[in-house]
Structures are given as C-alpha cells and as structure tokens.
Length: 419
Image (cartoon, rainbow, N blue to C red; front, side):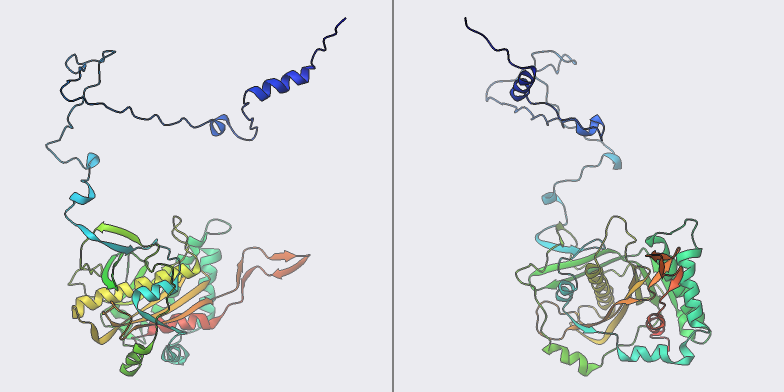
C-alpha cells in the first residue's frame, strides 16, 4: 500500500509567496506614500503616409470612436496676455549670442571659494586689514562714549530683548545686530560731519561685465545693504605698491575649470555695467557693503563660499563705477576702493577691495588688491539659559566672551573717509 504525505500548511504558504511578489507593508507611513508611482504613458507616434488623408472627427465636432483626432493649428491671440505668454526658442531671441556668458548671482556657490573669486577678478590677497585703519579706531576722539557698554547692550537687544519668542532665529538677530551697530556708529556725526553725507540703500540691482582670458563674465543680482556716500573713499595703497602687484602670481586650481558653478547663458546684453542707481543720484560712490550670512533660507553658503560672494560683489560694485567714471580705461588714475563687512550675528568678515585696473584679460600686469580679516568673533556665547554639564555651569546665561577689538574694526571701516 502506497502512502501519500500531505504537505504542511506552512509549506503551501511559502510556495505561494515564492510564486508571486507580495507588497511590503509599512506601518509607519500612510498608503499614499508607499503606493507605486504611475508610469508615464508614452505618447503614440503619429504616422503620416504621403498621398493619404487621415479621416478625423473634426467636421462632426464631437468624438467618434475609430476616427483619428484632428490636428488644429495653434490659436494666436490678437492681444497680449501676460499669463499665457510663450517665449520664442532661444535661437530666435534678439539677444541670442553664440559665445556663452558665465554669470554670477547672489546664490552662486563657487566650488573653490575665495581662490576662484581671486582668479576671476585678478586680485591679490593680503591677510589682515590695512594698518592705517587701526589708527582710526584707537584714537580717543573717534570712540563712542561708553562704547563697550553700549555695544554689549546692542548685542543683548538683538539676542534677548527684541523678540517675542524664547530664542530668535539667526535671520532675525543678525539683521537687528547690524542695524544696532550702524546706529551706534552714526552717533559720531556731531564730531564727524562727513558722516551726514552718506545714505543706506538696499535691494538695488547690480550688473557688471568683463572678460577674463577667453571667458565673458557678468555679475548680476542684489547684494545686501549698501552704504553710499557723496565723496569717494581714499585709496589704501600708493602708486608704488600698486606697481609691485605686477610681480604677483595668481593661484590656479587646475584641473578644475575657473568657470565651474557659474551659470552659462546665451541670451544676454553685452557691455552691461549698472551700479543700480540713476545718473543724477546724489550718492554715486559705494562706501561699504554689508552682507548677512544665513538670511536667505533658500540658499545656505559655507564660510568659504560666503567670503567668495563678498569678493565678487565688492569687485562688481567697483568695476561698474569705474566704467561709469572713467569709461573703458585699463589703468585707473585713481583706484576705486570699496569695503565689505559680512556677519552671521556673531562672527564677522572684514574686507577692503581696491580696483587698480580694468584690464582683466591676462594674468600679467597690474593686479587688484583685497585685504581680508576673516572669522573675527564679536562674542563667544549669548545663552538664554545656562549650559550645564555634569551638574556644573560651563556657560552662564546672558552674554559671555565679548571682544571689544572686533567692534573697533567695524568702527574703523565706518569712519574711513570721514576722518
């Protein structure tokens, strides 16, 4: 007698599961997040046979099964509708050029950071601020009464007092701190009347164009808060120091392309140099640009890329003003100086840029100059609550580690040209 063994129930389940795929179950998310995305339907190819006319349901004015869909010409409006405007192809635009243009804007993040910005602008980097600027802040006549106390109150106002929440965000307190420090510096107008010949401007658009080797470059966009003045800033380095820059060798970053991370466009205007203001503007000279790090939530720049952004826009402001004042003159009789201050609410970046030449095509000849003092702390901690580790207070609540020399540098740049 033969005996037949009945398979176990578990074996049947395994065999069935092996024969067909089972959907995975996700208990932590909803079904809409775990469902498969519908595959895009491929459009049917329209076949056209010469000599044969396709029978459509266009004359019947309704859909008829078995008949082809009619192809109607595109309806052109006899009026302009901005909501339904269709731009022509790039090759048919009036400003189309075969030669590409590489543009830089306020959200561009350069891969090589400051090194790439120095090559693009043909600039020599000098560490530290010029010595003559330190003497401005060290003089007792140029200091604010109760300076350290008032600066610390400005920091506390930005970090603790000017808020309705327990801990304000960086984009809030960094802007408040910058405005407070500028207000403190403006209190010296009674002893320095030249401060009254300045004005603050924001959300202005800049455009500058230049050629670097075989590349055509442009700077466009808005960049922070600009302090304009009626009188230009005096140059920092003399004629001999400017002539010595011809021996400086620019640092390269081969094999990385110098135009990496720049936007390549073919529709652009040539020789565009605009300072963002009309010709009869009473404050035509740029004094200091103030940049806020971390304010734009859609674009987060690392410190090296943030400093590169400062270099590029300082150069762009100086170049646009050089073309407006002197025209296409390669060597400037009087260099153009523009200052820059960048901050995230605690750490400051100080720059002084001097444009010596507009001949940027080759690596030889006179170079531009920039003085950089980076990563300077105004204070160490600003805690709403004390930081406790192992039952010991490591950082007390409130402001700690205030450094007065940082504000002295901030004040020296502000007073440059007014003393």
